[in-house]
Length: 73
Image 1 (cartoon, rainbow, N blue to C red):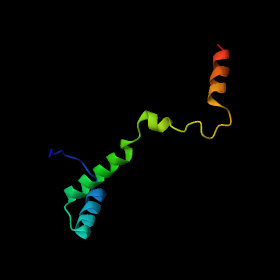
Image 2: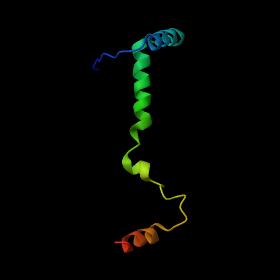
Image 3: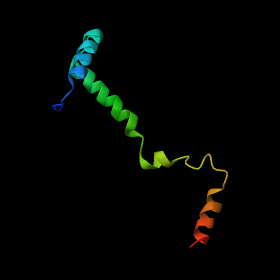
Image 4: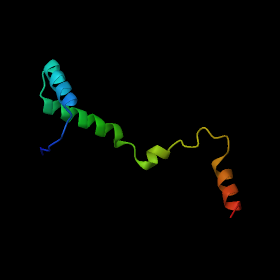
C-alpha cells in the first residue's frame, strides 16, 4: 500500500474524526473507502459508455440523418 499526503479543511477534518469515532474505524480507512467509492462511480464512464443511447430520444433514424448531413457537403 502506498501513502500520500492530502490537505483537508478544518471542517472536513473534524467531520472525518466524528465519523470515524461513530463507525469505529480509522480516519485513513474512511478516506480509503471514500476514494474507492469515488473511483468506482466513474470507472464505467468511458467515452463510449457516455455516448451509448445518445439518439434514443430522437425521432429521426440515425442513418437518414447521417445521409442528410453528407448530402450537405
